[in-house]
Amino acid sequence: MAKKEGGFQAKVAKTAAGAATHAVKCPKCGEPIQPVKLVASERTPKGSYKFNEHYVGACKCTAKEVYG
Ligand SMILES: [Zn+2]
Image (cartoon, rainbow, N blue to C red; front, side, top):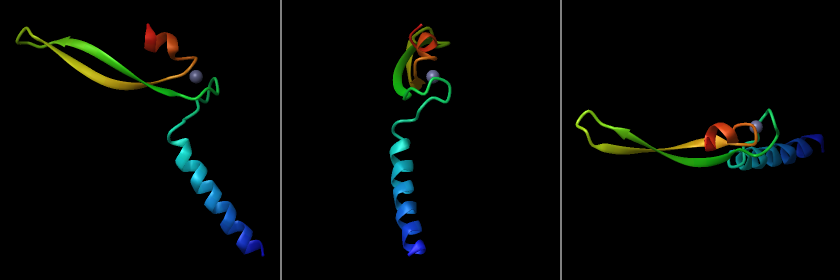
């Protein structure tokens, strides 16, 4: 019986871990970290501009840094 319960718990834990990858919580404020798309314009040596898109994780305590 104990072995069966262990298997069930392991399955639940695996599912929870999979969901956690989509909603990572910040260890500081406990709020879910939202991926925020930032576009930074960079001037190339040739004099034109290129746009770098990247994602950063934003939560309550990093919102100021992310949104400026
Ligand atoms: Zn935070």
